[in-house]
Amino acid sequence: MKCNTMTNGYSYKAKVVANIGGGIRKDVGSPTYDFVTGTTRRMTNYVMEKGYRAAIKANAGINIKETTATGVWSPDSYQG
Image (cartoon, rainbow, N blue to C red; front, side, top):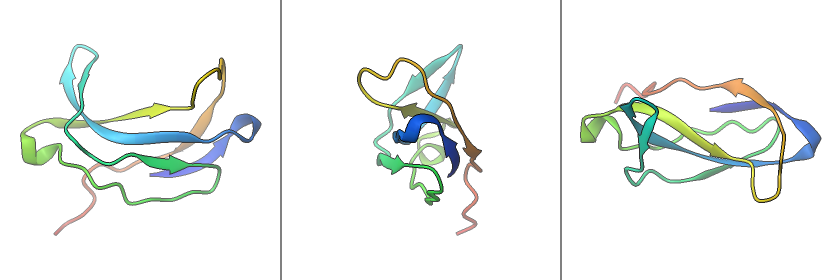
């Protein structure tokens, strides 16, 4: 995942979760990563191994009412 921009100098935490469908996400034990503008990270995840499709869960933090982040994410880009 790459964070291109984040408004107001904030950061966010993100992790890969299982996309169950119908807007439901499930934590499958993947690690959480910190992002600020310009950060690029290879995000370890256990979604496919558990039989699910991947999604990203991100949180900008407590008391942040409005912020915008832009970037890119490519699920399961590792070819092993």
